[in-house]
Image 1 (cartoon, helix red, strand yellow):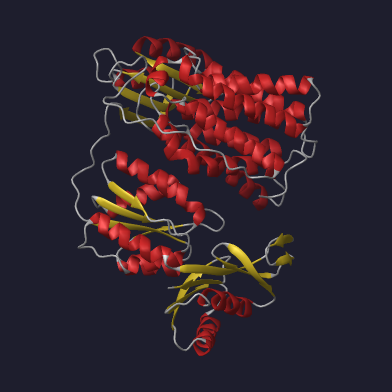
Image 2 (cartoon, one colour):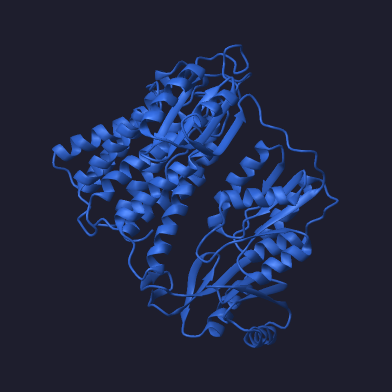
Length: 546
C-alpha cells in the first residue's frame, strides 16, 4: 500500500474509497451469503460493492476535472463527488444506508482545509456524522443491523478522543467496537439467530471501516472471512415468515427523484402506507428512494406526484427474473488497447475496453454479457483489478437468468491463452475448466515506466525508470524498454515454455516490436515467438509464456 496519510488531502480520500472497493470486491460473495434481513435476496455484498464503485467513479471524475483545469484536486470537491456518486449508484437497503454513511463522512471532510493534520477529532466527527445520517435515512430503524455497527464505531471513536489517544489508536478502537457490535447482531434479531449469521450490511460496513484503518496505517491486514450461513430449507423474511406469504411486499422499488424537501416529506408519508424497508436519502435537489411494496406502480406514481424521476428500478423479491430465451455461449474479454480489442472481436468474443489507469465498471461488463446474446457466458477480466468487478457483473447477470463463469485471468496474455483453447462444442463446465487451466499455465509479465520514486523488490527506482514485472512483482529496473522486456522474457522462460507472446503497446512501434521479437527468437531458438500489436497505453510490452 502507499505511505499512510498524515494530512487530509484529496488523494487520502481517494485511497480510502479505492481500498473499500477492493475489500468489498474480495468479500462480496461472503457478505451475500449472510443476507437474510430484511429479505433473503443474497445481494447485500453486491449492492454495497456497486454503491462504492459508483462513488469511486465519481472520485475519478473529480480528479480528471481538476487535471483538465490545470489544478490539484481539492478535498472538498473529491469528498462531495464521493458522496454524490454513492447516492446516484446506491443499490438495495444496504447500499442506500452506506451512501448515507459516505455522505456523513464527506460532509465533515469537506469542511477541513486541504493539508490540515488528519487529527483524531476529524475522524471521530466523521464517524458520528456517518451514524447520524444512517439512522436518519431509515423510516423505522432496527437495531442489530448496520445501524448498530455504525453507532458503535462512532461511540468508541468519541471515547478514544476524550481519552487523548492518537489517530491510529482511535481508529483501532472504533474498528474494534464495530467488530464487537457486528458479533452481537446475531442475537439481536431473531432471523439472524435462526440462521446463525451476523447482519450482512453490518459485515459490509466493517469491511469499509477496516479499509480505513488499513489506509491510515499503511498496513493491509488479512482478516478472517465471515462464515457463510447454511442453506435454509425455505426463504425467510424479517421475522422468519416466508417471503411469499400473504402480507409480505413482493417488489423492491428504487428511483431518484428531483423534489423539494416538503415534497419528500409528503412522499415519505405515502410510501410508509404502501410498504416497508423505506429509506429516502439525499440533499436539497436530488433524493434516492428505496421501498418494498406490493404495488410497484403506486410507489412510482407517488414519486411522480412530487417531482421528476430517473433511474427507476423494480425488482421482484421472491425470485430472479428469467432471461429471454437464449442459446449458445458468449465470451466477454476486458481489453486495454485497440489491437487486442480487434483481435478478440475477430475470434468472436465481446471486447470490453478499459481506459488508461481505469478498469471497466460492473455495468460495462454486465452490458458485455448481455451483448453476447448467449445463455452461457465466460468472462475474462484480463487484470487483477478487474477480477472483483467481473465477479460482481457475473452475479448481476446470473440474476437475469444467464449462466456465467469468471476465469481469473490477470493479464491479457492469460485471456488470449484461454480463448485459444475454448471449444464451443464442449459442455460449459468442461470449457471453463480447460480455459482456467490454460490461463493459469500462462506466466505473465510486462514493462512500464515508473511514475514516481519508490522502493521496489528489485531496488529503488526513480521517475522515468523502465520497470519489468513478472507475475505482478517488479523484478527488473533499467533505462531501455527493449532491454527490460528481454530480461522479463528471460526470467519467465527460465521456468520452461514453448510459446512466447509479446503484446506491444501504443508507443512501441511495429519496427521495434518486430526487432524485439527477432532478438528473443535468436536467444531462445526452441521457443515459438508471437508478436501482437496491442496498442495499449502505459505498458510498452506485455509478455506471456505458455
